[in-house]
Length: 222
Picture 1 (cartoon, rainbow, N blue to C red):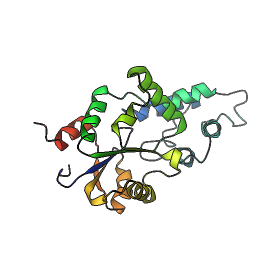
Picture 2: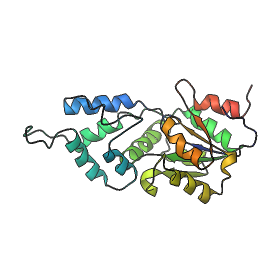
Picture 3: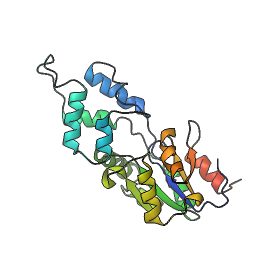
């Protein structure tokens, strides 16, 4: 973990860092809908172009659902009469989204007293609605993340996604950050490359290491 000396801003990923994620749940749900293993089409590390374009807001949610139907084989001529509802597709797509521990949000608020905090997430309209609904139901405030960050960037709203270095440069420029004094934290190792290309310090949030532990180290909590 990089030393805290000189760090004055932290850019956090959302899924797998703040929001608990289980990618296998969506892979399993899609596989059940398709009646075959679709693991080669979507993983944490690699995905087909459909998911990338949706995360960058280049297609609508309805177009994404239609793309899923094609990807899962529901539009093949040898499968007449087979279909799948929007709600079933959304449920499978959202299956990966777990919870945001309230204690984690509290740690972020404490960190924000010392560092500038920015949220940078590859996400999409369906997922955004789902995790905001969770925050509303579990915490009573769908905008709870707003209280934890100085700025929030969602890929589908800004038309760019990690690991593109252009996205990191945009955040640096718009927020007036010094990349050498800014730490980027993400659970997907491949996303660190774009951050490193523009001079950001980086930390891979690997399995078993939590935001809470990182916060305690950054704050030098004994």
